[in-house]
Image (cartoon, rainbow, N blue to C red; front, top):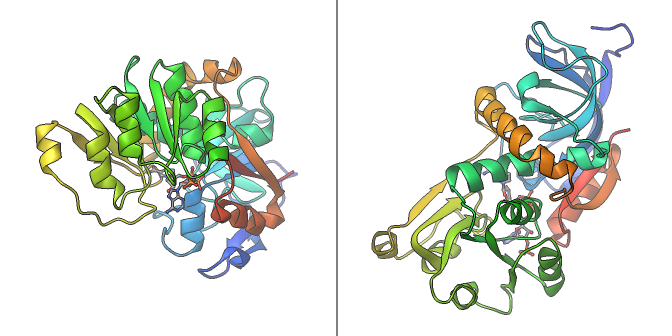
Amino acid sequence: MAEKIPTTMTAIEITEPGGPLVLKPGKRGVPEPKPGELLVQVRAAGVNRPDVLQRQGHYPPPAGASDIPGLEIAGDVIAVGEGVTRFRIGERVTALVAGGGYAQYCVVHETNALPIPAGYGFIEAAAIPETYFTVWHNVFERGGLQSGETFLVHGGSSGIGTTAIQLAKAFGATVITTAGSDEKCQACLKLGADHAINYRNEDFVEAVKEATGGKGVNLILDMVGGDYTGRNYEAAALDGRIVQIAFLNGAKATADISKLMVKRLTHTGSTLRNRLVEFKAGIARELELKVWPLLVERRVAPVIDMVYPLHEAWRAHERIEDGHHIGKIVLDVS
Ligand SMILES: NC(=O)c1ccc[n+]([C@@H]2O[C@H](COP(=O)([O-])OP(=O)(O)OC[C@H]3O[C@@H](n4cnc5c(N)ncnc54)[C@H](OP(=O)(O)O)[C@@H]3O)[C@@H](O)[C@H]2O)c1
C-alpha cells in the first residue's frame, strides 16, 4: 500500500441493534485490498432500506463481508491489490459492496466497480449501484421486461422505484406505479411513469385493469408482499411475471393460487447482497454496456432526496424511516 494511506479511519458502527441513534462514528483499521481488489477512498456512500434492516438486527452481513453498513460507494482508487487490471490508482469509481460503505475507506473487487459516468459527481455516483444492479437483474434479467410491455412497479418513489421507472421507460415499456401520496405520484409521473396510483385512495388492482383495458400488466416488481401477493396475481396479465424483492408488509401471505395456473403466471424473486462477486460482475458488465450510455446522456439518472455528512448517518436513517423521501439519500464522506 502507498505510504500516505492512514492505518485507521472513521466508520459508522452499529453499536447494537436498534433505532437510528445506534449508528455512531468509530475508529477502524483501513482495510487492505486482497488480490483483485481496489482500496477506495470513499467520497460518498448511498443509503438503502437494507441498511435500516441491518441496523435493526434483521439483515446480518453475509459471511466475509464487513459489519459496517453501506452497500454502495463512490470515490478514488488509492491502492490496488495483486492482479488488478481494470482500474489504476487515481481513477474515480462507483461500486457495489456487500458492506463497509459508511466509512472513509472501503475495498471492492475490481469487477464490482465501474467508472463514474461522465458528468457525474461523487454524490450522484454513489446513488447508482445498489438500485441499478437490483433493477437490472430483477426487472430485465429475471423479469425479462421487453419493449412494448406493461410494467407495474410498487413503491415508485423509493430508491428502487425511481430507478425502475426510468429504466423501464428508457427500454420502451409502459410504466404504471403505486405510491403513498399525491406528491410521490407526481414525482413518479415527472420521471416518466405513464400512470401513478395513490394506493391510499385507489385500489391498485382496479386502477391497473382500467389503465390496461382489462388485460393487466406483463411484469410486476414488488417490494410490499403481504396482501399484495394475491392482488398482484389479480393485476397480472396472462403469462405475467411477478418479481419479489422485499416484503415490507410481511413475508407471509394468503393468495388465490388458482390465478397462477389459470393465468400461467411466474412468481420469482431474489436478493443481491449474498450473491457471488462473479455474479455481480456479470451485472456490472451489462450495466456498463447498456445503461452507462443512458446515464451519460441523462436519459436516466439517480434522484437525490437528501445528503448528510457521514457522522450524521443516523439522520439519514431517520429520513428513510419517516418515509417522506423521494429517491435516494446519500452520505457525504469528503
Ligand atoms: N432483493 C434485493 O436484491 C433488494 C436490493 C435492494 C433493495 N431491496 C428492497 O427493496 C425495497 C426498496 O428499497 P429502497 O432502498 O429503494 O427503499 P426506500 O427508498 O425506503 O423505499 C421503500 C418504499 O416502499 C414503500 N412502502 C410500501 N409499503 C411500505 C411499508 N409497509 N413500509 C415502508 N415502506 C413501504 C414506501 O413508499 P410509500 O409511501 O409509497 O408507501 C417507500 O417508498 C426495500 O424493501 C429493500 O429492502 C431489495
